[in-house]
Image (tube, rainbow, N blue to C red):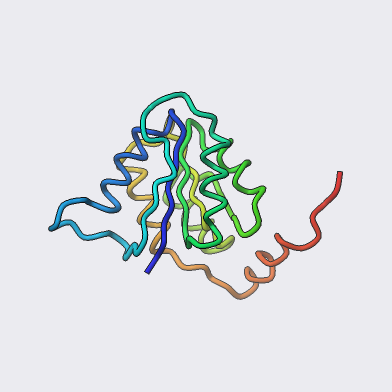
Length: 155
């Protein structure tokens, strides 16, 4: 079972709403896809102008208790930059299913960042499916992922 938190700024609002309904349908017959045990929506809850930083920080803060996160803004870039400032977050901007698979297999990505300006709903659904079904390969990749949390560089 997976605990998921999703968030978007105003530019990603519409795609977030569609993905949320697809991932965790409200109707009785619709089952949660990908065995999502807990689903949280970090906002925005209406398409009002919002700084992506605020949403990315809400999602990143919750990655201590959530297994996966999805962040959506216009490009995905700002969300990834902000989220990766937090311990335990491995956020990657992906534009295709192959991006998602590689980021999961090699980097154990736990936060999928999507650019709503360049990603349609069908592509986003396929990317989410890959996000939940692609396994981390471990092996030599484990050593590299652990290094992400060692000695932070100082400027």
